[in-house]
Image 1: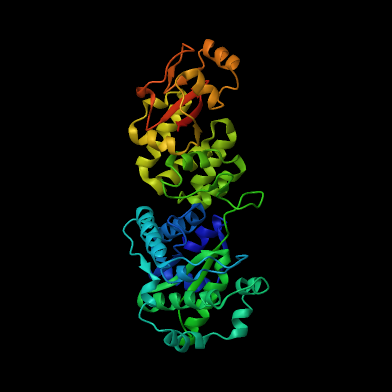
Image 2: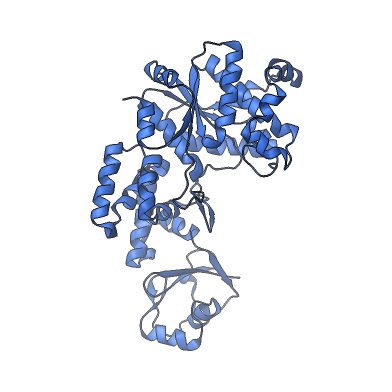
Length: 411
């Protein structure tokens, strides 16, 4: 079975340049690369499809080559962006490169990560203009959709050069790293074909090819991975294991098949079986649970998955205080703090925080046994706040009812 059939069966492929060259690259175990510009100190869910695709290509005999854009990240890809990017400092790029390199190694295993800064650090601007720029006709570049779409709103010379840099990346990887395939999202078609045309200037019989994939969107057409609370990151310090698990476990039924196809390496036949079982008893959320399991294990390993499951189980049972320190810390990171002035007793704590709207509600909930501090039921309206109630400095975890937790910080 060839890689193109696998990708088409998953309905991932948007465009590709040459089927024969892709098949030959698979037969000869050539390299396949995808670039990741260090625009932040973490990758996010939008990157996950390309990371999983590198893993998928590896399973079909290719050598995956993740490329960190130490050079291109300093420029910024203008492809279908509405405005000029804010340029990063050298320090930011170095910090971001280090962080996302670690993430890629964790997910892809023992792969060699290439930094494209190595292609340019000894090249002068005159070298670039003579050796690279000479091969790009102005009308050719202006005809590229990813560039043309920005002309009216403004496009600096800095960002205008981006497609030439990416093209030179591909040529360098082709010649020095035995890399025959470049992959990317559908917004990268212009950059990928620029690279192929550039390679053709030096080798008309080259064996390089490109593939783009459909961007991951929801059924309603909205961008996947954007929530009311912001971007879903792959760094546990920005999006905890529990938050990532909840993001996937709460996906709608009609989103699950595509997500299993795009974001896991489960065989297509197995995905179909999972969906068939799910449809028999949707209330069991079979598809969502398998999706969450696969993604969490891929991104954070079995340890990360176990932590997310422990927190989920503790919340369901209403005994968060039973969590170990690591899991409890992970859970607390997901909560918004409510800041109040320092108070002396439990009554003031619940009312000042807004968890109880009045003394009357507080008394009613107290009498019904519905108020807790660190999962310990409160029985007395005059209970004083003591130091052993704090789970961290000036912070108390309280609960109303069985599952509604609130993190209160006293200042």
